Image (cartoon, rainbow, N blue to C red; front, side):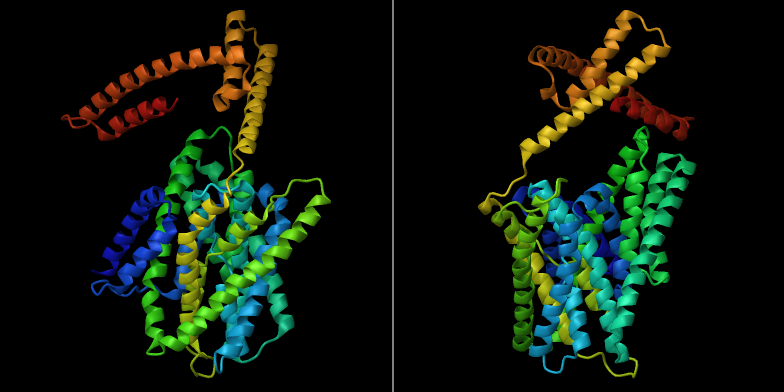
Length: 528
């Protein structure tokens, strides 16, 4: 099997793992990691030959962009306190604790190298957290916090990692300069993100066509990441800023085709890239095995201790942090998504799985320092990092569904339905307001006006049937049954038309482009 065949196996696995995960109640990323482990120990599978410095630029931009599309800037702003406590403060705390323990148990491990190890194992993976949490039906407030933590903690961890590696390579560390680099990195990233977001928004209007617009959204996150890194900013933060800008300002309510096409396209990209990313994590296991080189007992012991530190620090930190957030939340009027019970706090604790970023950072550790000597204890750092990744991702990922079920943590479906009803009412009222504005400038026949008024009401009822009164709901249900029957018949008519058009495609003299154009027209008509 060559590298290209291996890539196709991972892509196929990414697709198959989704229905398998749904069937057995297991997260698809964990299944892909297990597939990668199986492939890694198979003799006929080659070692993965991906330069470590390309893993993050190739995989993170589309994954981050896809994740941000599911959220909004308002959600981040509302949850800024818990996100800061988890994505910034917890990363610092975990880095310090891991560095202190690793420096004390690994003979001869320098402080700078220990900090690099702490930084690369500190951030929970944003893709693993959102993929796992989204499948388990957790409360929306927990999913929001996990998404925010996963998206922003990489920024902090990667900056800490680069500072620590630079200190280990050069042999010198300047705290003031490191703090300044952290601030400048964030400022540059935000500036690049906003500039590219604004430019992409203007270019989307210029392109017009849905296919070209969706294609541009694939290029934008890569451009944002690369440009920010070239300017010594945080590529991760730049992608987040660009994606949040476009989600806030780059949406045209009436551009239905672009929205539908973009949603489908990014679902496909998210599924495939996520599968490949976690498959690579399993495949990179051979690197960890190779670094052990006969010291299995000693290195497994070190890895076990660091795994315990990472897991325990998260729990010990979350308990007072959650309590503090609740106290601050009680003194304010605005809504903020926080864990409301100890059960939800436990789920947040066990959801701290490491993944793609940790693998890429571990493999990207330089081989040599500036004076030509080997990077101190590089093999030990890589092995310990993979031990943490495998333990948290596989062990926690496989047991998290059981823990959620055991603790009975579920989404607040009644609250979600209430919000859906409120949106349905707002949609219907907006439609009625627009109808009144039209009636002020156009003289509509009474019959047409009443019909349009019913249609405006039905806009809301179709979103949430419970918003109507009992009698009106029954009348609506009768109309819906009749409409469903009409749509079934219309669907069969359109199906017959499509079959006839497709048959014409293979006839002599038929122009395939014209046939496809007519077929697209029929397909769009089927969506109405």
